[in-house]
Length: 475
Ligand code: ASP
Ligand code: MG
Image (cartoon, rainbow, N blue to C red):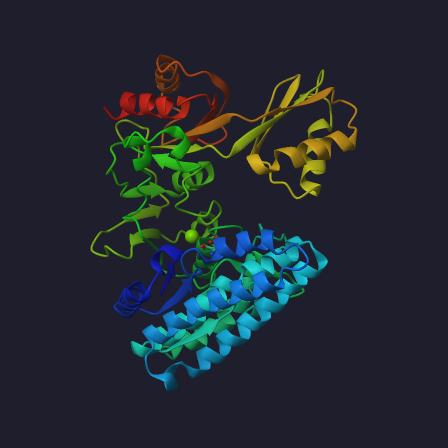
């Protein structure tokens, strides 16, 4: 039994819907398929949410809904020409669009959006996609049943925007629902990106969360394999942008860089893939590796538009390459909050107080680097001010002053054997120094396959540093 997941990059028009249908129908074993929203839809919902938090947004809401609805209906009509065959899905879609429209009015009336309503509204892209895919696959003779993941017992911890599935509970529910269907050769189609808390409130797994959904389903059903279908050949981990000498301001905020521009990584260990995803490879959701890893299920990244390619396999057993370094990832969307105070690093409970105040404001701390007199919290850029205010208001005694550090970037180096290889760090930092880039902070040893450091982002420092490391290791 396999779980297949198709992301928005594989679902962009009628032609790609057909391509996806062909891939599914040529998968001869039993399968469950997970879909994300169609390309760009979640982004549009997310952007529109900002705009509609004002009274008097009715006109804009109507326009937004009618545009989005027309686009989806046109995809449905084109992929299922016979009216009779698409009627059920048509009704389902109309219903969903009405619901979404009402929620948006609600946001505009109260002029604010709570994490709970945000999750609910963002989840609609997946609902539309699964409905349309159900009709489209039916035409290809694939017997299927669509499911919205907040009605199937995919129970989460209720952390809106960054929920985690409670695996034992979800496993029981998903098995009960899906195993009989699979037995009678019906393919369940499931919305990715969200589940629900114990009170049936929709909770998303964070952006890109459909990968995580698929991994959870693979875990629950003891899948033989989990396939993540994208529009790249695999864990390219290449930032063609850096190779192409793009100016730094035009780089994506996060990315990876490995070897030559066209280099594809055939095999990665779970640890390597998880670290790369964590550091900035936007190719995978940062927490998606975990459920599959718990049951040793191989994750294969494949290209919808180039299915002849084998892709990247992510498996348990790591291997060390000759150069040790497999990939270089970067993240420009980071900031550091420096917490100064004599002895903050060793005073009992100081770190606990700080972390709990930050967590209470819903901010995710990416990493912590401490010394005796300073605790450095690594955060996403957009969280910096909120974290600063949270601690400022908290009046924690040991804190003498807070400092925001913005213009920085993170570089992560990943490869099995990295930490234990003698002289490797010296080569990395030697290369960075030759490029005349200053290293501000280093964290090593937390994982045996990765470390990262932070540089001052000035001019094209990030590109220079990565290129220098690259030519040191991949000459
Ligand atoms: N549609 C969601 C997003 O864009 C989830 C996903 O794509 O995996 O973040
Ligand atoms: Mg995605």
